[in-house]
Image (cartoon, rainbow, N blue to C red; front, side):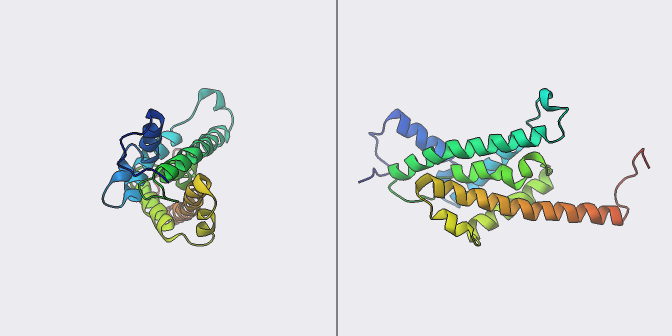
Length: 189
């Protein structure tokens, strides 16, 4: 039988796992813990988007590929953490486990390929939450995978869906701005 969330006899490792899995406690929010965790995910997405090491400056897609690898590595690390947290909380996918939302949010912004200024952060956040909550096909199928794999994978797929929608929105805005001459003139013509 699993431990209740209020047990005080957890090991230091168990407490660390729960701290990470709950997004430093954001998942313990009494109101919409997944949304609270996703807010923390915006910070993670912004940090991932900022990764641009000088040694990759000559490679056009070098930094985006590195950002994707960092995002996938974070997801891989999140799987055993979420698995252990689910066992500790004696639930298949407890609401307070939000590390899955956090690690998925960079996918919404194409791991730094899409803008991360405030209007796009808000649009991406809302779009991600819609996909994460509604779980259109095949997201729900991924949620049924065992333990932490299912917990993390459904959010990663929701992040990809939201990223595609955000990318389409960004492309539409860019085309409208160019078509309507709403872009400021450039020194190149």
